[in-house]
Length: 435
Image (tube, rainbow, N blue to C red; front, side, top):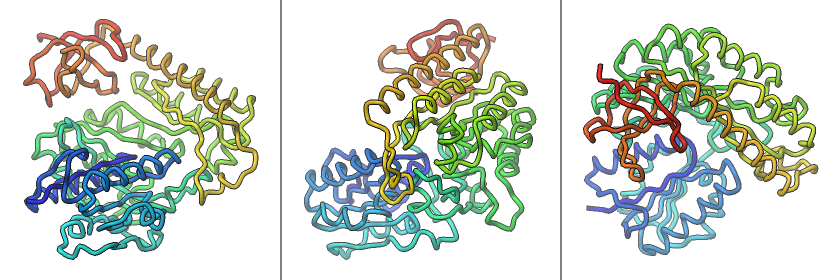
C-alpha cells in the first residue's frame, strides 16, 4: 500500500481538485498521510496568484524532498504550469510536473511504475477547450464541499497571471455538475459552495443554453435539502436574475462575495477591470435594498502601481460608505508575465502595508457592525465541529455569521435553529432554540 501525502495552496478550485486526487488515491488502495510524514508520493497543488504563493510552493517542494529524498514528487497547479523549469532546478529525484489541463492524469502518473527522473505534462493551457473530469467523493474533515462548475478566465486583468496558468473560461457540463452534486448529497453534505475561476461566465462556451443562474436554479430544485453558496461573482455579473434567486430559492444562501480591487476609477482602468466605482456602489446598494440581510464581502488590492494617497482615499471612502460585511485585503504583488509588472510607478512597500492595515481595520469594523445587527434574531446554523478553544459547538448562519453555542457533538453536520444573543471573539454566541 503506497503512502500518499497531499499539500494544497490557493483557491477553492485547487481544493476541489486535491479532494478529487484524495478520492482517486483511496479508491486505488493507497493510504493518505500527513504531508509532514514520510510518504512514497508527495503531491503539491501549487498557487501563483501572488509572489508569496510561489515562494510557499517552492518551500513545500523542498520540504517534501527533504522528508523523503526517494519519494516521487508530483507538482501541479498554477505555479507548476508557469514555472516547470524552475521546479526542475530546485529538486532532484523522481519528479512529475502536471499542468492544470492534465490534472485528470495526475493519479495515474503518480502511481506509474516507471519512476522516471522527470515527467512533464504541462502543454499549452490556452488551447484547452474542456475542463478535466475530476470526480470527488468527500472533503475530509469538512461539513461543506466545493462544487466546481467552471475553470479558466477571459478577463486578463493587468495584475493577474491566472488566465495564463488556467487558460480560457471553460464550463463543466451541466450533467456532470449535477452528478457531482448527487455524490455529495449521498455522502450527507448539507451545504455546497459553487466555485470556479470566473463562475459568472458559466455556460457561455457551451450549447446547452445554461447560465450560472439557471444552473444554480436547477441545483436548488434537484437538491432542496442542500444549501448552495456562491463563492465569488464579478460586479458586472450581479443582475436582477441573480438577485431573484435570493427570493425564489430558499436554499440559495444570502451571501455574495464581489471583488472590488479598487474604488478609484483611474486605478480600475489600469487594472483592466470592466466597471467603475459607481457601478460597484450601485450593485451593493441594490443588494442591500432588495435583501438587507445578505452578507456582501469583497476583495481589495492595495498599492497597485500608480495608486496615490488620493486614489487610496477614494477606495477607503467607498468601502466605508457601503453596507458591506467583510473585506479580504491584499497588498499588490508583482507577477512576472503580467502587464502590471512592467509599470514603473510601483508603490513603496511601507505605504502598501499601511494602507492594508487601515483597510483591514475597516473590515473588522464592518463585520462587527453586521454581526451586531443580527443579535436577537433566529438563524439556521450549519454546525461544523466543536471549537477546541472554547469547547462550544460552532457553525455558520445562512448569511455566513460565525456562531458558537452549547451543544452536543452529534449536531455536527446538521442544521439547527439558534438565537443569536451576544458578541463573542470573532463571532456571535447563541442558544439553540428549543422549539
